Image (cartoon, rainbow, N blue to C red; front, side, top):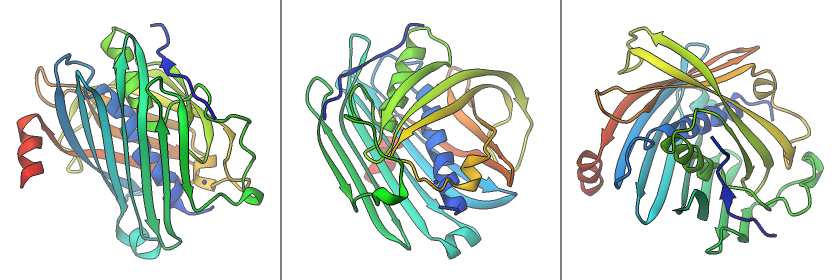
Length: 287
């Protein structure tokens, strides 16, 4: 299976936890904006709390590093409250790669998730040109429960978090919050679409550390293979997926400050609860 380095464009079973995994992924994707304003090496981290129908169901953290040697993006999430008690789930994911002459070149992607169904692991390795050369998927997919993957599913694709790096570079080079990205995560092949959702003022709330004007990035996707035949009812009815980004500090980087996913069964809301940059992140990492 081969996958060429991605060149930037010109300028779900019936558990709610499946839809909330999409929420944490949405925050990571929106976090592409976080490092879009700095050319020097920069490290940042953020924490989020996600609610469904008014109840906290997930906590998430994300870290981003970008410098001359490439990028590293990592995230962790864990179910909380009643959902965490009924269906405990914890996941961690990380992606590393290079940014060269307008190209995002993935090197390594790994994700691990642990739930009452056991542990699931995916590891994708790429050669220096960004071609997918090895993959580990444990446990293997139940082919009867999923749509078949297309032939050579990894060709010309990015891993999910390298999409974050791709959108970041697009914005860094003066592009808008829009683009399309072919993705292979080891289990599913899909395309991600990002479009501008306009601006609005986010009112103060006790849930978040941010209030003020923000710009929306609308997320959508098209499943092309590897997804479950029986779709998750929460993901199936999602009508809007918007990440709102803003600068909590004057002259600071753009940060995902809110996530909204509208479904027929309720609204998923993600709020920024903490943010650190540079030396703050390095100091905490050594504690």
